[in-house]
Amino acid sequence: MATTNSSSSGSHVNASSQTIRRIQREILEIQRNPSSNWTASPTADSIFEWHYTFKGPPGTEFEGGRYHGRIVLPSNYPFGPPVIMLLTPNGRFEVNKKICLSISSYHPELWQPAWGIRTIMEALRSFMPTPGEGAIGALDWPAETRRQLAEESRAWTCKMCEASNEDLLPGGDDDKEDLPQQDSDDTEDVPKPMAFVALNNEEELPSSPKKAIDDTPETPTPTGKQTDSPGGNADEQSSAAALARRPPRKMSMLMQILAVIGFAIALIVDCFRHPPEAFIGPSGQ
Image (cartoon, rainbow, N blue to C red):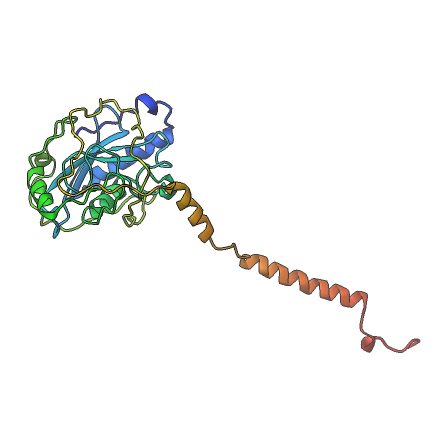
């Protein structure tokens, strides 16, 4: 996958210089501290569209697999979350559809600007062996089907960047889990993966220099019936619940100290204005 420092195109022409610098800094950080478990870089046409490949987590039905996908960064990145998609058939996520996670565009209220491409990759990889539970873009295919797809995924080639998974991430899966040190501005714990049920998956992707993958079929369901997602506005409910759980603000220690000092001064002034009779001598003395 080619790396470029070109700015943007399409809906990203209004991106700020702060956004461009942040993305360029992430490109350099990943180049200096590459991971043995995944690779990610922007396309040759735009630094806002990234392609990635990661290894299936060891000890799971995805072990040995190589999974390729897209990340589309918004023009207000890092203050807005990205669109995340998987393109390689895998049995865990639907291909060529936006994934509904706490780190994706489905939940901007949960996104943190300190997160970046490295955070996304580590969280997405760790989320592979977890249950789909009806989340948007999620699948719960049988383990045997996933193992078969993992075996076939090595030879899979992306029709957009024309790179194969085997070329992008060669070798075995005996590498240790790694998370290289990030720059001080971007250091943040990898979020625990969270899935959310959304109402639909019909939102359009941000404009891309490449055409959409028209020849990539939607993922069929091998067995069983699809489970409909429950209704309700997940974003509004999540925000309201978070607001309701927020504890009331407490008075700071400094304000408490100032209040005590003010009360003491008021008592002293009051004593001088109205002294106790015990301290006043007889008249004429």
